[in-house]
Image 1 (cartoon, rainbow, N blue to C red):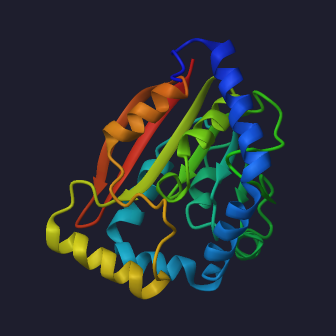
Image 2: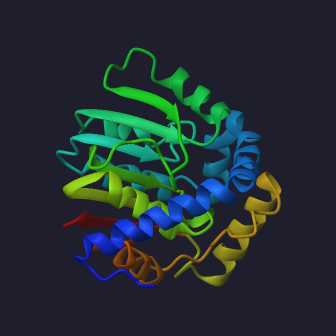
Length: 239
């Protein structure tokens, strides 16, 4: 069923149902995802630049750097920490999370001595964080590679304070011309092989907008950024 915007009891009930689903049936899939990405922890940042080029990651970093007053932040899918540093500059604190311990270990090495960041393993679909714990939730290069992303958006809604901000950036082949799209796909296959079956390489603003509406978020900004390769950048609010 679809959650109506502003119906908090319905939204909470749906979140609880999805949480039960994840507890019962999600463990093996979670392990599969962790194993897939852990293989690339040592080369992840360089692999990303090889696949999508330099301009699009730089454009995402610039957008993140312009986000102000982020407060208490949780980042899902931090990977090896490539985008995390931009968050630490404009926030009170950052809890950076990932499914992969190998990725988290790479990230910890890069952030030694930085006081306002902690790292921990977490599944973005079902966390142990208390309700309304954060001012901002961030998902960079994640929403298009997870199964049933609505579950993760519902979890973000649960742990965000009223008025809290959700920031999403996701590489996408949407609006890319044919030859650059083919090139990006070939580079992905060369570096990482066949993607997981639920990978969505053409996530569109409309598709993500529908998911956010179901999760009771209000979109403040949505746009496509990048050069030859593209990313969807979006900011939404929990009302």
